[in-house]
Structures are given as structure tokens and as C-alpha cells.
Amino acid sequence: MGQQHRHTGTAAVAAAVGLMTLATGCSGGGAAASDDPAKEVRDAADALVRAGSSRARTTMEMASGGTRVTVRGQGTYDYRRRQGRFEVVLPQDPADRGRRRPPVTELMTGGDLYMKNRGAGVPADKWVRVDTASLADGNLVTGGATDPLVAAELLRGARQVTYVRETRVDDVAVRHYRGVAELAGAVPGASAPYRDALRAAVAKGFSKGGVPFDAYLDEQGRLRKLRHRFQVANAEVASTMSLYGFGAPVRLRLPPEKDIYAGKIAER
Image 1 (cartoon, one colour):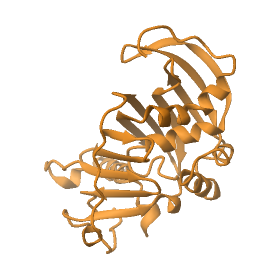
Image 2 (cartoon, helix red, strand yellow; image 1 turned 90 degrees about the horizontal axis):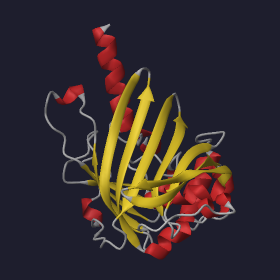
Image 3 (tube, one colour; image 1 turned 90 degrees about the vertical axis):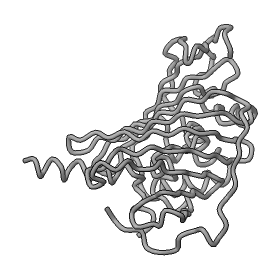
């Protein structure tokens, strides 16, 4: 039994590292409820673009086969340039034998995802580049840290939206909405290149039946917190992001071509 438990845990951790083998083989014033909650939620991506940029915290929890693992990330995102930089902390793998893993650096830029310290046979000084339109999920869960703008674009497919209540997130007054986002419904209104990523997720049958969500919007319509619940193969994945520090500077430099790994990524 002990051996079986270790094997299951390692498999779940490997899946949470990015699921990348699938791809590579208001401040305080009040916050009154809207008369059209679905429209307000669907417009959240536009509100982020108007805001310009922010800091972000992300948490991804994956449950599979009785094992639960958590991946955490933190970084900044420029919604107008569609670029972000995150440091993602992976759960400890028993195979590491006590050695602490360095965080994975992720650069999100338009339709591409760059990852450094990816592991799985990739040299430590090299980056992996992935076209998000080639992913089965459009980079909603693959990177271990959901792209904030992709997550907001998914809300363009929001249906069955209800207003829950007014509450606070990070001491900011927000409106809490709950509903289901349909991937196919999000595609027509999504901005390029996210339209291609979401269209690919639809074509590959990702998270069929819609994606339940809880969205918390401030008085300017900006997302302060967003939680999605996905079905991925035989696993349940809950992705939560918190946005704060709007207007924060975003510094991002893409790696030169010579630093991008072109070899095979080992399956774990």
C-alpha cells in the first residue's frame, strides 16, 4: 500500500507540474449589484485592459486518485500588451529526495508560453516555448498558473450568472457573482490571439459541460478574484487568481532563440 500511495502521489504531482506533456509529445465605497450580472461578468476582460496592469497571485489545486496537490504562483501582468511574468512554486516530488526545486519562471505573451526550470529533462539554463493554441486547454491550466487575461476572456461565455452578495477582497468592496462559463460561447467575443486558444480548447473537448466560476468585481468592473473549476481527464482542477496593485510596472524580456530548448521533453 505504501508503494502504491507513493506512486499515486508522484503521478499527481507530475500532472500538476504543468500538464505540458499533453502539449509537447475600489477602493472602499460600495459596490452595488448590476441589473445585468451576466453582461458585467462578460465585460470583465475589457475592464482589465482599461486598468492596464496589475499584480497577481494564483493557486491551482488538483485532486486525482485521492491525492491533492497545490501549485502557487505570483507575478505581474500587462493587460494591454498581453504579457505577464510569474514565478510558480511546484509541490515537492518524492523523487527529488529532499532537494528543494527552484520556482518555474513563466512568461506569458500573446499566444506563447515560455517556461524556465521546467524540469523533465530540460537543461536548467534553457527555456521551453509552447504555442497556447496547440494546448488542449488554451493555457487555462497547462502552465500551473492560469493566464489572467485568458481566465477573464473565458468569462465572455458566462451564462446562468447570479449575484450572490457584496463582500470584500483584500479590504476592497466587491460584488460576488456565480455562474457557468461556456468555452464555445466565449470564442466569438474573445480578443485575438486568445480566440484561437479558446477555439482549440473547444475543439479538443476541454472541460465539457461548462466551467463553474465565482467572480468578484470591484466598483470599476475589474476582477479582484476569480475561481474556475475544471474537469481535466480524471482530475478536478480549481484555479484561483487574485488581482491587486493595479498599475504596477511589468518588466518582461523574451529569451533569445539560442536559449530556447528544442529537444524532447521527458514524460514523468
